[in-house]
Length: 486
Length: 93
Image 1 (spheres, rainbow over the protein chains, first blue to last red):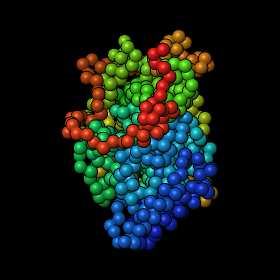
Image 2: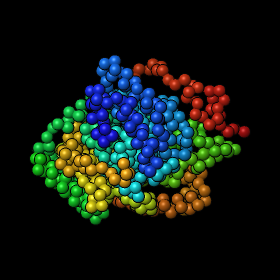
Image 3: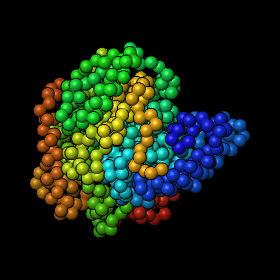
Image 4: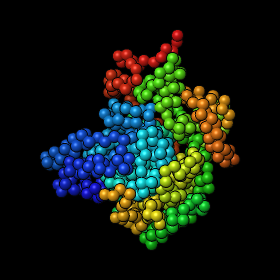
């Protein structure tokens, strides 16, 4: 049951083959047994989860219609605000904060019948690519405990991969769902910007942030995405577009699908040979199923990294101004108001968050706006234009999600080395496009490899259909992480 | 980037940095900005800056009071408060 995924768990509970409370207890039992080694959870909401599960069982007993995720145990990245359940964004500055409301995505998941098992670890304020920037703990990769789970949604990816939840939510600002999904061998989807409400999501870079699912398989990801997507009056950037039945899209064929292969992503020395080989097998599998592979150019790709690391820190420096020791969070003692701000923030933020606040403040300061922020936004327009042109010729773009498989703790010693871990995932956020990572094999050392798909705005159905084809052809099947003994 | 420059930015960001952090930050920010040199070289003549990922019209809602959090709940997490008010160090002495 643990390994069967969200859709199958929901089916069994609806069919009366399993009770929600048994399923929830099974996952809580695994968390108690294994999370000491894995380090995915920051908070486990055992009693609340049991109460939710019992409510589902009572609905079933009363023959009431069950919502689509009834009884499915999920984990939430700790940047998603949860009423009555501590939310820290993996930062000391929010230690002990109990939010007075639920994020829209959390409200929607609860309404869909999902059981909230708890909050999972991430890089502080979602800034990082390894979850090493958490102020609280190290999260390990279940495929090899000496390696990182990716980031920033590393707790979400590790928990799904290790069977410590049926599915999870993460957030993705520059790759933070897709990169950890790739490194942990699970499916991750970053929806089109605006597809999912950001209300109640701890803001990092507001023009880039999106919430999305991490799941055991493409079907589960589609099911969770369907539950959380849609217009939200509380998020002015959420899109007023109907939510399709994403699960229905999976049944389609990929024959005739035009798949773009951008040379800028493949012609790189830093691309690991095992990753390259896995992507070649993925391409061959799609071709065998009738997809048409087309070489395309995304000539401004090399500018994505600098553009991203100006836009994201600039927006972060503004968003994180709210942590000032006044309304919530930690406060340091000081004689004056300004000193209180400075001391509270100096003590509460970790090194990477400070670095990005400084970088953003530098880029936005008076007299430098044109040189940095405006320039980066112009480059962003060029990157978007590259994609617009490419999508005249192709339906979906296929690339590696990451240059390498999971790396050991401490391997990326400089900030720039770590930033390069996201080199393939940044453009998608800058252009606001939907992206997904789906497992496409293992390295010779037995580490998962992810294939990234990038689609047209709101074309998640095509993205998911292509992902399902890759999963069926070259996915991991029954192979599971062996880092945790049971 | 000089230490003085880093100090000035830290103040703009209302961020206290210890002396060793200032030192480290000067080096790291310098290196990062160097990597961004490619950006300056990009030809962006006549390109409108992208302000939004997806074209959309901002919506208006009726100007009607909606239910909101009660003040005691909204202020519950404050490090210092007086009734329903946030308490801060003196702004004017």
